[in-house]
Image 1: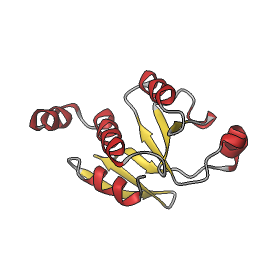
Image 2: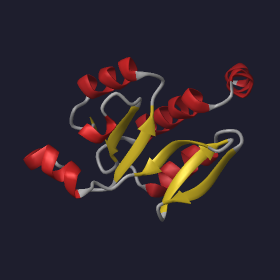
Image 3: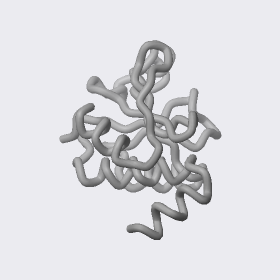
Image 4: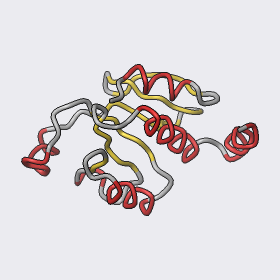
Length: 128
């Protein structure tokens, strides 16, 4: 199980990341481009998901492209999901109370890579 402290630690470990707020909720950005954020379900989301709507904390995560989103959704439907609001958008929703901390760290790094400037991302990858 992961929590918000795990999200914060993983996000802030990435170069040039800052923590801010959007709509009163935490968001982590690299050069003003958000890559992970708290995303509670809205009434429309719950209505669309019906009985499949999760109860716990939800993390929004950018992904490289819609194909990557589809792969995550198929790989672990108990962890990753989406709502009609995100149709056609390269992001997934994550059940924070279900994802393993090591999987969360990898997901956050991939989200960062999806939005970070190419030179910054290349430099980070080279250092690893």
